[in-house]
Every structure is written in structure tokens, then in C-alpha cells.
Image (cartoon, rainbow, N blue to C red; front, side, top):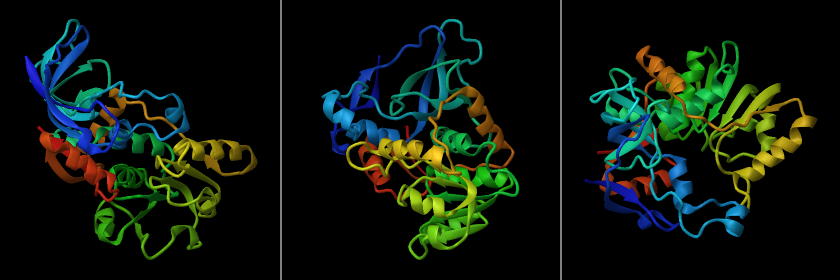
Length: 323
């Protein structure tokens, strides 16, 4: 049997993407087959499609993609289960992560990054959660506690909208930086203060923050340090700002080299998707502390348009693919 799926076989702009008929996957032992109802666009789709910008990619990277499928975040219904799977059964509504999620069906390890869909959410809302929610959770868990001043640069994007809500749920005083047009959205998510980056540079207001989550990368490390308290924490999470050769790795290398000589703490991490943290997201949704934000939806046939819009850098929340 076949299914519709997004494929690309060369690096380049979104117009290299094709909607194709491919073999429908069959769940192996320990796997579940999910009928995808919605999937979300992420920065990883852009990086996979364009190829890594780093110098190592230019020197030794593959001429053709190793992984021709795009999409990672998904929500859907379990269609079938493989041998040994007892945690799920056909008909269960789930959300989670699996490479190649821009497809009608995908297989996921039952003990992998998969969890039951939060009650009350649509499939589109649930698909908007995994990567952005898990990244914000990993960044702020234990850091956005009561009494702290937290600033989220890029507060209206996928990660930013989750981070504002997490920091507020943890009891922090939250400042969101966004465009004027997104100010009302960020306030509605719980931000105590909103800074319009078009009118004000948050690194030059004189206000100091205990923690800055930088999802944009449009300020130098020196500027960001100026906006921190003496023992403040900077979490760079923009994927940009390191120059054309090394990309974000250039910035991370500089931060690591600087760390022994300054009081500020620089926190870098790689988000590891897992069922336990997905369950935490589900609990936050079901207790009213987290609401996914969707900018727009596109059908599977419009993935190129969806990624083009996402690459513009002005999406409010998540761009979601519906199936």
C-alpha cells in the first residue's frame, strides 16, 4: 500500500520539495503506526532542507540528503501496533516526534517520544506542542521561579509563546520582546511587560534580568550581558548569530571560551524528546497553564508555502500542516 508524503532529494529552497506516493510503513516490534492528522513546521525542517551552514558541511557534507523526509512534530491516531506493544492500541489519540511526519502515516517507537494527546486540544494544537514546548520546558525548568525577572526575546514565536507561559506558571516576572503587532498576543499569554523591539532596545533600558532566553540572536553577547544581573543566566537559543562559516556554533564556541572569566552563566543544551516530558506538557495543558498558539495551517500539498512563510521569521506561534 502507498501513502502521500513530502520528500526532497536535493538541498535548496522549498521548491525542491515534492509530494509523492511512497510505501506505507509497517510497524515493527516495539513500534506503533500513527495516522498523522497534523504536523508542525520547525527550524529543523529549514536546516535539513537547506543543508547545514557550517564549514564542516561545506567541506565534507553529503551532496544529497541522507534523510529525505521532512517534519518532526505530529499528532494523530494509532492505526496499528507492532509486536510487544501494550501501552497503545488502535484508536488512541497521540502526539509526539518522528522524523518524516509530513506524511499520512509514520512509525514511532512506543517507548520513544510519544504520549497521549492532551484532552481538549485539536490535533492541530497538539502538533504545535512537541519541539517548541519541550525546548521551552528544558530551558526554563527550575530557572523561571518566583521572584526572578525573566526576559524572552522572540516571545511571539513557537518557543517564545511556550516560554512566556512556562515562566509565568513558575512564578517569574516575565518580559516579552516582540513586534508591536504581536504585543497583545504576548500579554494574553501572561507577560507582565512587553517591549516593542521596533521602538526600544531591551539591552539599553537599564533594567536587569535574572534570566534571558534569546530565541532571536539579533543582539551581541556583550549587549545581552549588559541586560543581565551580575549573576544572571543567558540561554542562547536562536540558531543564528555565529557568522556565515560556523553558524550558531561560532557563538556557542565564544560563549564557552568566555565562561571561566565572567560571573554570568551561559546555558546551552540539546532538547531530547521523551515521553515523560511530553506528559508534562500534557499536564500543563490540562491544568490550564499552557495553550498552544497557531499562526496558520496548510494542507500537506502546501508544505513549500508553509516553510517559506516560516522562514520569513514572523510567524505568531506555530505553522501547522493538516492532513
